[in-house]
Structures are given as C-alpha cells and as structure tokens.
Length: 143
Image (cartoon, rainbow, N blue to C red; front, side):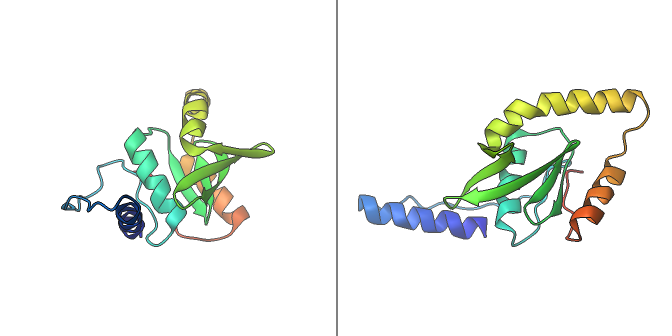
C-alpha cells in the first residue's frame, strides 16, 4: 500500500516536471528485531511503522485499534492528513507525529523507568486493558 502511494507520487512528479525518474530496485527486507511491524492494509499503521523504524523509537508502542495506539503508557489517536502526513491528537488539536515523538518519548521512558523500579510495569497488561476498553482489532507492536 505504501509502495503504491510512493509510485503514484513519483508518477505525479514526472508529469509536473516533464522528466522521467531514475529506475530503482526495491529490496524487500525482513523487519529488524524490535522493529515495529504494521497491520497490512492499514495506511495509518504502515506510515507509523515507517516513521517509528526510521526514528528507531525504543519506547514500547502497540496498535490498540484502527487509529488508536499505546505509546508507552500514553494512549494516542493518529490520523493521516494530505496522503502521508501523520498527526497525533494532543489536547484540543493535533501535532505532527515526528514532533510528538521528540516531545514525549523521553518523558514516557522516564515514567516507565519509575514504574519498573516499583516492579509494576507490564506493557501487555496495559495493552489488553486498552484493547478491551477500545474494542478488538489486531495487535501490532515492537518486539
């Protein structure tokens, strides 16, 4: 799905510029250990996986349901705007996903470290709680 979108963008740029893009080869690689693996066919999840894996986010992140994710201890809603721009609901507005990660990742890691120090950290339990509240959907997460 993501590849198809990229090819459409390349085709559009070729029409606008009147130039032909260079041929390229795509190597399909297995996800790295710990890499976020998207739910196939879910554009939000596929774009999210690309960003998370490019940033090499170390925080545990999992899909709760379509558009809903657990980012460490924080539940977040993510949507696509403009074809490939991901926005995260923050307060009364939205923030770019990359900015969101840069802003909140360290605070979430600190919060998790504090919870772990008390012996109370269980990401799977927290995820199951949110999935039961939000209702079903396949789980996709960092390993």
